[in-house]
Length: 424
Image (cartoon, rainbow, N blue to C red; front, side, top):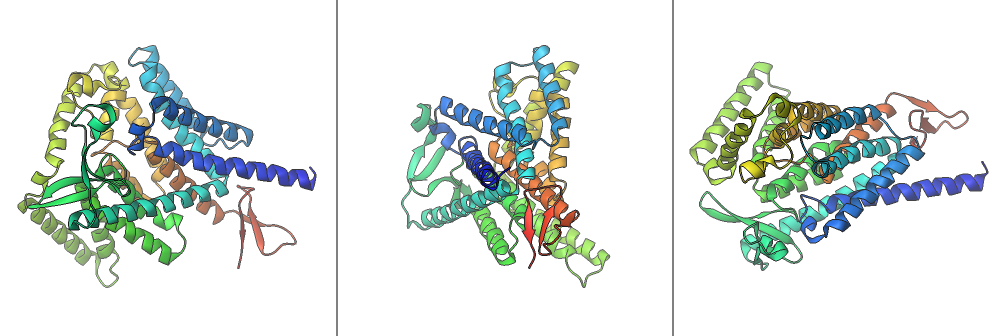
């Protein structure tokens, strides 16, 4: 191939990759948990989804980026069985099927193309900074009365059905949700998402993957602190509990002058003390924890009445709304009830495979999804793909470098022809 033709080929590949990176985030911002989902007409959202999946399919096929293609086999088999046995309709299944395809194709692209991965990381870090700064300004401005916020019945303003969500709204800084806590009223940041718990989940995700995405220690520490502070403004109990445990374990187990016995005792003592203080203050009675536990019992009533077939393949998407008049809070319970044990085992395996490189992240996803359901959100799937691909790149780079002859300062990694690193 001539030099000019080779340059044109590389530029075309780079441009297509950059377009795909940006479109992935357009797709993520168009769907739950972002409130933009309610403002975009369904045909536009479906068009964006279809275009992104088309791009991913074309790139993966054209450049042979398909990895872990074996994951397509159980997906097709599970959804095929559900349709053949009439456990659910194609319309209800296609959305979740598309999301799983998105995850696998995104992993294929990001593993094989480091430039696109780096672009995705930069886009998300910049977007996170914007969301964090806006949330902090909204929280401080509302709770001090400096910045004006007006009441907004979100359901009535979108679809004419009042009572869906009530916010304190600012056109620039977004929405807050009011909450009485320990005798005080706070405005909790939602980060342009439907609920603050979704916002806090992605903030916590950032904290746990910062070490993989940001090499500069100063920038990484600043990013972690900003996300942690913003997480506090969301006042999510699930977020508080996890990171209290996380930093407690890190602090105690990281102490070099303490023996294992002393570390264990200190951890148990502080853990019991923290739980005792929370229970004595009736903190949980002022949160949604009790409501979520009550709903758990209602969900299990559906499981108790299941047949062996519905237990394996699920009762169908939206069954809780039909039988109980409510939706699912817990992602794990939702998969078990709606899609069955087989899909639950598959999703557990997929989560473990994509997060086992970061044990805290894996624990975080398992823990948080008992309180909410983010499995089918494009943003969650994209971030999982980014985290997995980044760990894959770093692992390969530390294992299989091979230097080009005649060029001692430049190494090309044999597993990834496009990935180059120049030594100092």
